[in-house]
Length: 326
Image (cartoon, rainbow, N blue to C red; front, side, top):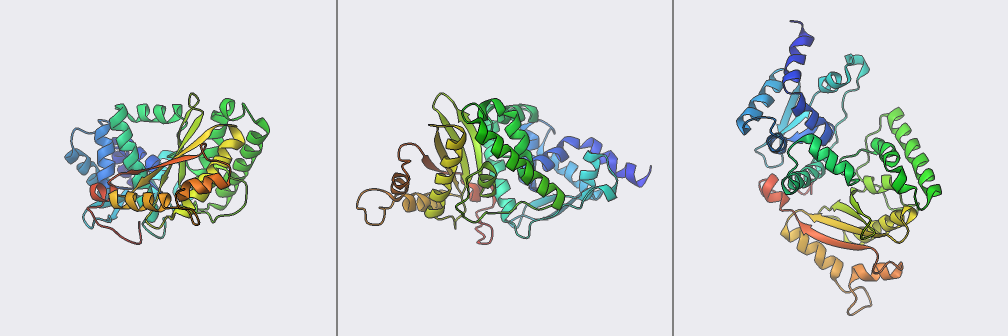
């Protein structure tokens, strides 16, 4: 058996596991506990021990690497270059080495999205990866789409997006195509955050800020969005982003409301965010800050927001708070 065949054999045996790692991980990176939870939720292996054995086999074949997760106990699994070669069917020279973020923060953000997905799988009884993908696609969810995926997303939902304001749809699609071409040509890594600017709000801008579409509700005339806020995410920034998100919604869906769900790291984080958002606005005795910001932009009663505790730190990080990650 050749060296190539020796590496392909374990990839063939554990193809679905590797597909999960590439599809839902950041640059093919995911905490082992979450990878294990997804594999078990979709009945890919009979037990947690079987998933662990598969991971050890892939590591021994130099297909996966590991480093320590933020809880100082679990593994963070990293797909090596061969995984991309395997799925693309290309030689080493034809596949770029995956670029890794300089900090753990992007991995934390992706892990929070996977936490959301696991809750969705349980709530909606999505027993296979195909069932989960069908659900996300049917609801127009962009949670796991990359910037380069957004043009296809716009085309897939063309009948919905272009119904009211086709000229805005065409302009935004052209902009997304240009962005995707630039990213592909320069092999750029997606920015973690985009500075605030007076430019026109777009879906790609929202994605750069970590805001994703959860779904559409034509009956309620609403677009539901998600934001996984960090501890340094201030109320002013949340409101800036909500106002921009409502502007994007209005650019395609006149008279639709924007509902932003803010996912907090834990109960203390939720309480802090709610306190900052509901504190009296400067110069006001009763009107809360979040409402005053909307009133100033004539969006009161249209854009809305809520804050939810995910208990992420306790469940996936061993209760450890790293200031460089959160």
